[in-house]
Image (cartoon, rainbow, N blue to C red; front, side, top):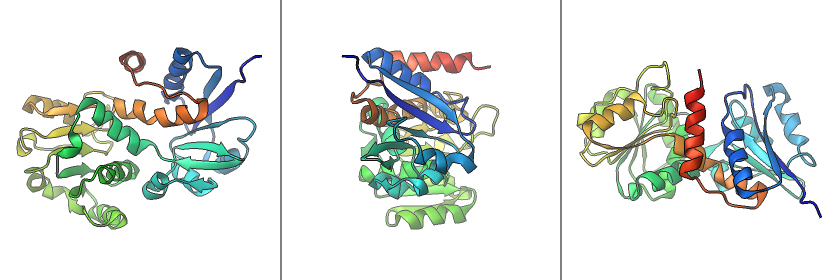
Length: 279
């Protein structure tokens, strides 16, 4: 009897930049599974209708920019992570109902577990940015028991909105407060687009951080952002953002295809090679 092929997707607009087909395709081949995973470009006005019609065509999929918040509103049911973060990046079907979660917090924490064991015993945490990625990071930090999370944003009102959302243990600060806040921070997380290829750097005075602080950046193009380069020059432990991308893909793959994949050195090398090939 031929094994039934299971089909999954990543949907966004645009979508050509997504490395998700590469990641999931690697795992499908590695595990010898009969399945497919493909990228679909769906415009915002068509997204809600697309999500209603996946039953019978797909077992689920990933949601990326600009549809994560639309997916939050459109799914039939959300889990606790999606509720807290306010966005959905992974969906699957349960008895015809589209269920949504957000695996970004899982991916963030798993990447640090892999590259900097014991990171969750460091604190306080200093988080740069107040967008959707910051929501996922704060959720992960709170899940790990961190009780002093300092949120810094150039528009302090946005930081206050986010601190109010999460409540006790999350405080909002302006960019000008960075030097003082960094003095005892055990973990520095950049969730902004500052430092992306061709962009402005997230300027942080690394000498202000304790000598045993960990610095991580969710940006993975370039893999060594100016922030990470400055931290390395100071001799601080650093974790790049590529591992977050890889680890956040694990829960969805397991749910759709029934096998839990591994974020291996071979997978990382494959994705790095693809990034290096990008013009």
